[in-house]
Structure formats: C-alpha cells, structure tokens
Length: 100
Image (tube, rainbow, N blue to C red; front, side, top):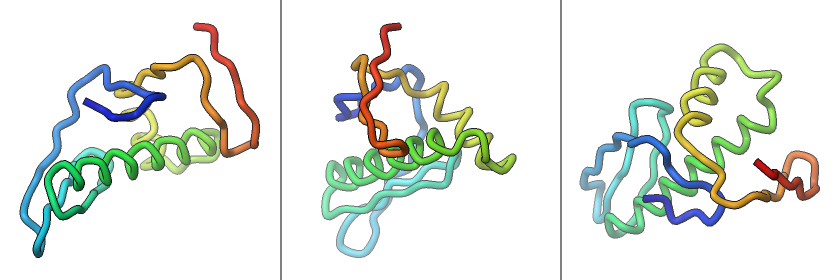
C-alpha cells in the first residue's frame, strides 16, 4: 500500500527486498527503480518516493518520451490512480483540478 496522499495502487507491483550493507534495498524489474534504508519500512518509503517522482517526471514529458520511457510511463500510468482530485503540477507550476 502506498503512503501517498495523491496516488493509490490499483494493481499489484512486484518488488524485491534484500539486505544491502547495514540496511535494505527495494527494487523492481518493471521500471528499474530502487530505494534504500536502514529498515525495510524506510527502504519502502524511499522506493515509493523515487517511483512516484519518476512517474511524475515522465508525466511532465509524456509527449517527448523515448520508446523505453514511454513503456515505463504506460506501465506506471496503469498502476496508479489519483486518490485526490487535485495535484500540484511541478512541470508548469500550477494546481490543476481533476473532477473525474
């Protein structure tokens, strides 16, 4: 379950958790992102933050993505649902309101 107040998962996301030095590493095979932390929970939060940041950066550039990045965007776009009806858009510096 995501800790995000903006998005929620609508499909399972398969990840791997392994020890990494004195902490943990969380990775996925779908979009090649990872998170690290001193505990599993901290590594999961780091991974979630990185994954959502990556998704939002792809969203900002969706009309200019390479084929590989387009695949990542499509995968993540079908994985997340906006839980709130508004999101601050860092790409353009405004708040957009979504009614659907």
